[in-house]
Length: 187
Image (cartoon, one colour):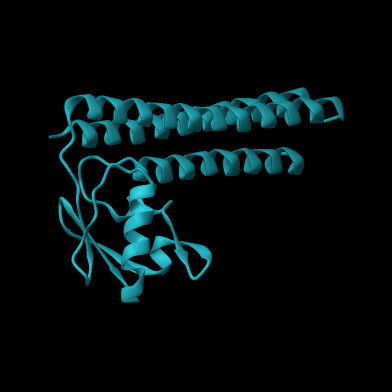
């Protein structure tokens, strides 16, 4: 296979891999009624005038399936952490006992579960758009090489391989969505 076609294939695969990685990150943020420290990945705390991620000022652990414990490294950070969690509007009511902050994750209602499944489907669709975009870029690059003198057979072969690659990554998206949907709907 032509060296340029190989590079196009590698670039397409990288783009599709990034879409899957992003999907995995986004699906991990969707809580399924279970305590998960990654829920707080986007929470920032005011730390002496700077906005820093919560994970940089405290330990975040799960005590059991429904309880998250946040232990700040400095006791003075208890109130700012509590306020940041409330401001993040995650639907939690933090309980500050003067040493740690305890958060009880409420069980999900049926409506909330359906909303979370919709959100997961949207994230999956976004990943598929990313995958198709990588395919489109690769196909256009192949056609461009075809005009620059690469044989038509090599271009067609590369396009077929790109389509197979695309199909495999779309299948990966569907599998991630299916497992997240199952996780969300399990009571």
